[in-house]
Image (cartoon, rainbow, N blue to C red; front, side, top):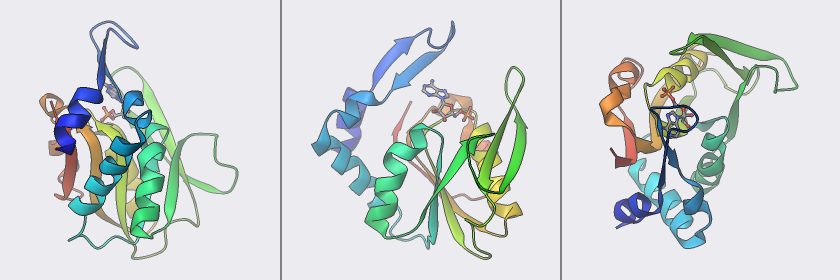
Length: 175
Ligand code: AMP
């Protein structure tokens, strides 16, 4: 099963990038093309009942499977980037982190009015980053069609934060 294969492939890195955090390293998945294809197919199948007009990938690991997923679903792929990286006019959203704050941006013309947009990232932790992306989708006139992740760190209760935007929240592996 893809879930078991992904669980086996993910490498735990204790105390990275800081003490007390167990970093979930997904790079071994990408070093395995067969497993990478299975991951994309699994994400695609989990979204068969959802109406999706575009996929947003969150910088940077949300790009890795977000783009091939968008190709597999034949929908546009939109970059959600850290402030200052996108070259054209942007809409930005500032949000609080555990320490300090962060700001993300999307190109002004990427999300068309009324589009059902899926927000994709590699991992759901507290949900702050995905929620900020959902806020930008709404501000740009889109609807949040759902959220998809490879990994959900359920003990951080990110789903609770995202449910107000969409209850369509999928992940391949839960910890
Ligand atoms: P959050 O906004 O707290 O849900 O954090 C999600 C973002 O931080 C995602 O883009 C993840 O890639 C990254 N992230 C947070 N915690 C971890 C972790 N333990 N391992 C790997 N990535 C993480």
